[in-house]
Image 1: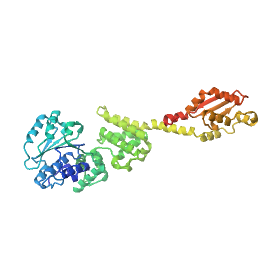
Image 2 (image 1 turned 90 degrees about the vertical axis):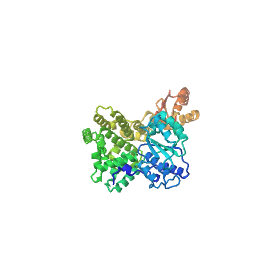
Image 3 (image 1 turned 90 degrees about the horizontal axis):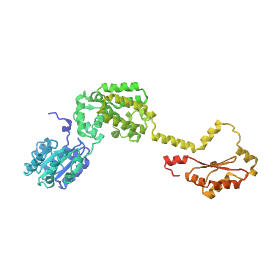
Image 4 (image 1 turned 180 degrees about the vertical axis):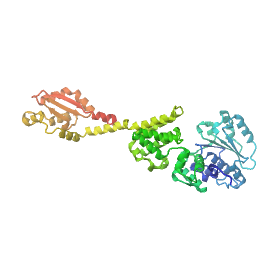
Length: 499
């Protein structure tokens, strides 16, 4: 049997076997069931996700000879089905939009559609990479796709839908194809290997599916390469050695060495990667995927298909040492490094500088760290128990203050008290304070305020309060001292609390 590449051998023959495009298959199936066919279809999406395959399947559904009308289940065995699958049908014309871009090419199509199909129900034009057509060619198509002969259908496919004029989009039914998940790609690779009796490691298939980046065709191409270099069994170790990439264990070791500031070993390991044939750009991509996965873990995302690596394979040491802010900082540096790699004098030197940045990341202060420290300081300042205990243990047996002497020796001659002042403030200014907010020492009355508005109120009426104190106790020339506790200001700035 003649060899076929896996992408051709596994090309879907009907909408039921399409991978990861259920919405497209459902919508077109519904249209075929009700015979509500559009004049033109526009398939958009990334490369390798099934746009051209879907166009051929739709052409087969429209022209299958085993059914009297278009059907969602073509037989696959009639002459039309076989010819369309092989790309040799005279009534299904596939055109490469990249090499047929001019008005003259569109004019030839307009001339051809005057003739009905030879042996089919419809004459179908599949134009791949349609965004490559010139503006003149698009304009020449407008009337044709809006009012074609009843036996003509157009199917356009493109990876860059933003380049399609709005006048074309408004005359077509548009279907957006999406990237295929890692799990679905891995299942299809496993199915393809089982069909040819080739053994494999799960980790190797997972890596192939991840590297395909949502493209089924890319996954099959990587699989063919892996089969070619394997010795009867596809293993991750062999892929690492012969396809040139750094595995999760290598990345764990490299980052751990840098975080431990053992830069000599980290640089030697980096040079070992390059000596094995791993390019600097590939190392940047591998590190980007690694730190991106760590960022997802910090956000409590643990699904392996999103991480790109098994969760258990990450170094716990690295996860413990890196914070979310540090991880995002390193990712940003990697993105900038990748952009500048094209013009770099020495990409290896820049990677060594990046390792130095990892080593110094623990000394960098981030806004979140500052807020955490301020929060801890706020808790300490607003909790007097800790500071009182510390004061008592550090200064045993302090001598009694003069305030205490006055309160003990001559209570009957001193009518000014904390209770009377607190009652006065509550009655006159609607300010409620606690005894610990008031200090009476010798000839000074000190009031500590926790809200800026209270501080402003008492400051404006300080003379009035001074007079009240003098009337309350004329034996002393009392001095009033107002203090504003800055804790409230910190809360207003960092926590949004209103004073």
